[in-house]
Amino acid sequence: MEATEIEARLEALDGWRLSPDGQAITRRFAFKGFARAVEMANLAAWLGNRRNHHPDVRFGWGYCEVSFTTHDAGGLTDADFACAARLNDLVA
Image (tube, rainbow, N blue to C red; front, side):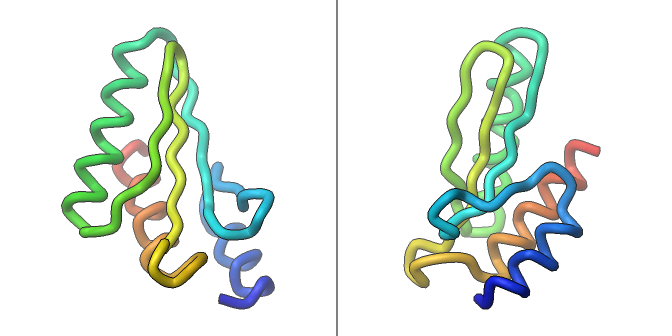
């Protein structure tokens, strides 16, 4: 995916940023406490299973960070942006 297309698509995704290596998009969700962070991690995992496009998820007390990349393609594809948009819809 071209850098200009990635930039344009990121503008439409609230809260998502490009990884430093340009291979993934990431969003960090903030919460009060641990239980909400776990729930967010589970939601991201559920979405990944549902779409057969599994994110990398990191979480701890007060945060959950979700990253999408297409490992087989070696970078970003439509599937990454579609999953990020759907996750945004689910938490809105």
